[in-house]
Length: 176
Image (cartoon, rainbow, N blue to C red; front, side):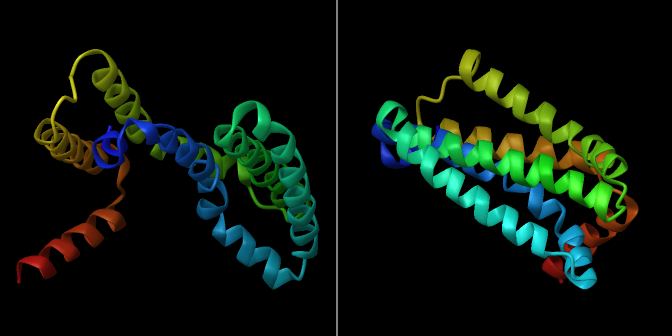
């Protein structure tokens, strides 16, 4: 909805493109410690070779998919390559070759993702079926309400003591 308000309906596909390219990027971002481990062990060559091969596959598949699907096809190719490379192959490497407990890691990420996942689902359903986004003010009110509910639910269900202390410290700095 923001993109439509900001840039117009001609750019509505930008959201799909953004999601297809940014969501898979969450995989290597949350696993940055695993990259530090393989770099420290000197075993990052596998990752470099894999990423080079995946870049070639992405470029070639994008070349063939753009005529049929346009920019969404290009984003879809990137999404699939990232999920296969970062999500499947690198997780196998981290678990089998490096010895990291990747299943436990993803179980923990899954627990932390319950609130955001539920909020995303409820938000999409409300926007598509219940709440009309017919003005910028309505949209801004929705964003503020959504953010407050998300913050409260994250505080209650997702954040550990350390994270809560970080938030409290930030609030104290802002108020002083």
